[in-house]
Amino acid sequence: MIGKNNAAKQTLKFKLDSLLDITRAINDNQPVEVLLSNFTHILRDNLKIGKVVIYKNNHNHWACLLNSGASPEVIAAIEVERDLLSFTEITFVVSDEKLLPGFDIVIPVYNNSLPIAYVLIGDIEEEMAGISPVIKHLQFIQTISNIIVVAIENIRLFQESLKQEAFKKELELASQMQNMLIPATHNLPNNDRIRLASFYKPHYEVGGDYFDCIRLSDDEIGFCVADVSGKGLAAALMMSNFQATLHALFTSDIAMDKLLQKLNKRVAESAQGEKFITLFIARYNTVTHRLEYVNAGHTSALLYHETSKQLELLESSTIAMGMLDELPVVNVNRTVINEHSLLLSYTDGMVEVMSDTNEGEVDSAFYVLENAIRNSPDIETTVETIIEAQNLRGTNKAIFDDITLLGIEFLS
Image (cartoon, rainbow, N blue to C red; front, side):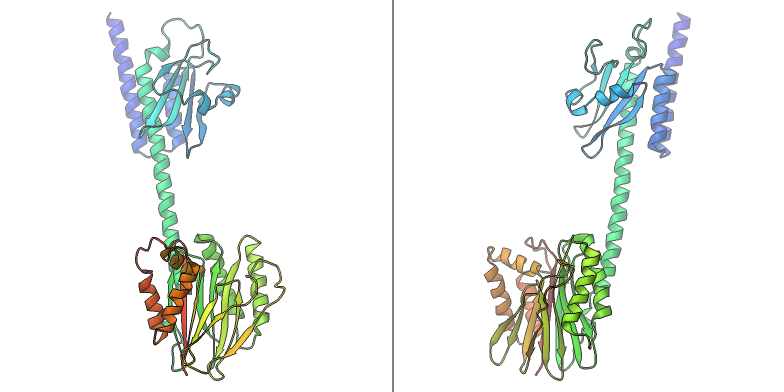
């Protein structure tokens, strides 16, 4: 009797020490490989368990996390969805079943009412003498299995949170860098001959919209509004590349058709057929009042002449950048602005939010823009009227794309 009591005490001490060692390893942030090694050592080497297998769920994909003692053929034959999902509590497996051959017990591990793992336990000797160690140490095996699996799941969740936090910081940095590429209001070339106003709002931290104003010479100013197909980081990176290309190529002496061909070549090379860029690009001479522009698959800009009350849609049939390796034709349009006029260029995100607000009618969206440009005394008022009417600075639920708005006022 004394011998049995001593054996029981020793077994109890071993289990408590094992739990303590596992807990310390978890608190010391030991990697998953170490935790699994400790788990296997306790069950197989100390308790003489023959087989230990763990299947774990990771992003709705079940995979074998640990296999100690089972043949590869057995592991390959088990399908979690088919063979294990039906087990909702600890279950003994009938030894002569074809299902899960060689295993004695299934221990499901749940977290937040969902199965995250299945632990399969079996003896290596089919006809060993005495009580099976699986039965003898069942409660301990279940306890340590739950501790190990939950710890590994917590490690996974923690690592994912670190990745998300790192990605969030990268996005914040990318957003800051992208904002540096967008002209600030105080840097817009406002003078006694031309004034500009703008609004820029990416749907996510970074976006694929872009606008720019480039002083080409003392008398010439170039401006551009562009939109990369798609949203997010990939679109933002492509747009950053486009911005650098535009600044390198857009000069006072380059012909507009040649400029567009060069831009298209660069975009096609970087996009490789996966994305394209629509744009409205123009050059204005403040002395001759000549405006030349190209609309490459972009939304039509609005040009309103205040004295004559005429409204023009600035559009052309040039295709978007990057759709083809070479543009078949570049339609360059020209007009002379001899009176006080307002120009409004924007991306399709502007039209989409207004169409949604106005019951899905694109015509209504253009009416909002037309009404704003016709009834505003200057371009700052025009842009601000549109911003306030569509609640663009607030939490407008209709916004699901990047939004860019560039207004230009030609002073007579």
